[in-house]
Length: 559
Image (cartoon, rainbow, N blue to C red):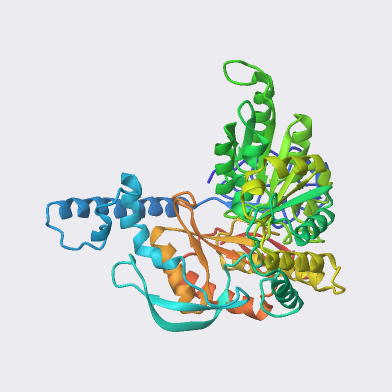
């Protein structure tokens, strides 16, 4: 997978921190200076060391050539036999109709184009049971799942009536464990439910503006360190409906190639020109900004009305963290605006749980539009936009989500308020601080153990999103099923959500996962990894024995 490797001149340094250990690097792999392995991991080591106040270690190990070839061969065989069997069915030679549309669907207009239809029937349907499993409990450290079976090649499912209990939850976004049905937050939510009811039944501009909304937004602005904030009922719509209100024709959007679908949709709906830069690659971003300033708009060569850079705090499929100090530096240099999506980073990153801005120790005023969701670390629903008062006042009038959508439900608002106060320590406890620290410890421990086992793990060492690479199509379903057999719920991801040869399992860590639970999960992952031969890494981390042991004392070794 292509990533933006940098050339490090002089003595290698990782964002101001000396690189030590094997090949001059501690806790990561460097490519682009003498002594680096030619087939090693592609690094994300920033050149601008002065911009960073902490180490920034991020690795994307290249796909082994044999694995890549076998993955393409696997998809090729599935595709070849799929088309062959479709041909034989057409001539009534093939009598197995599992991979054909149901009889009751044939009179409807096709939902997919030819290849999408083929892919859905012949590839996706084989492993459809790996997704949309129905839960019947709180998404805590352990969950209960309704058992289901399919008798028609996963086109439909039937429930057996059995509940599989105490499944270890390694897939929910419940980063700080606030999605719970006990404790003071539950009591506060129940009290608000009894006072306000469940629904608001109106928009904010009509009869749906409650005192709880005002309280939430005032608290949010203080929590984020900005002038004002505006809440929305849906995280996806916070992006897709607000970007068109901020930019339009004659404006330029410069977007990371791995941005979320909601950001992509919002950019397309805006009517602005869109240009894509390589993931987290500052050279690629700067080139686009420079070209935009020099050349202006196509044909007319007029200057762009606005240039908006759109990035995420944590990229949800890669587990990588945006190089925010460098993005802000480029934003200032080229007089553009910055839209930061903190859906996965707010609450989960930073000493104070205030997201990627807090993580890097930056000034919130340097981010023009701060977006986030309440669906992850806060255990609720909805999203927000935060920034200067002038921006928020404008969005209250021009944002489709603010003007036309029903406002947040009062019990949901109370869940968010209680969670934010807990993180800030305003509930009179240190629980929020403890959970932030516990999440950070769980992340480091889990990532380190997986690397020791020999799996290829993507992303930043501080990211709660941990992608474990599976690659081959047959292993997507096999991994999910084998883990469920061992009472562990995981999320598996394949094409088109990822590049076709980069299928993966995505773990999302939580502060409520104890070390004992993590050890159980790691033991089972290790067994399944051996069973399915998933340990592709050529760089296994092992403890150094020649100096005192601690969590960070690891270096690269060849198998």
